[in-house]
Image 1 (tube, rainbow, N blue to C red):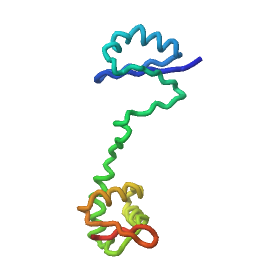
Image 2: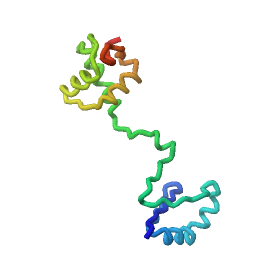
Image 3: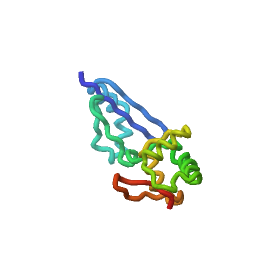
Image 4: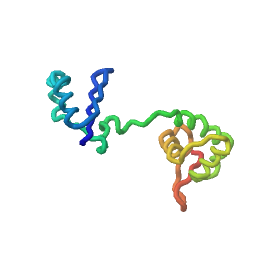
Length: 137
């Protein structure tokens, strides 16, 4: 049997129907046909099969889950700078390892993103033979 699902959200209310493709279509016709007539922009309506991945809306795809990591790093990196850690150029790995020594675990990606997007930290990235280094500006 072909499994299918249908989900509709209007305001804070959300309804999801799962079942065979035929039963889902029948329930949509029975209970939602009048509602859907008021939304001509929704046509054509597609019914996603569980084996197919439904792509998120483009607006939602760019959103990142907020974890507070940026805020933490904005407090922690200046501490390293004040201790003189960035007086000499440091690799991203060295920065990450120093943070870990203090019990602060962050990925290279988030460390780099915070340094590059917050010039007020007073830490800049410079080109080195082996890639990039981070130093007090």
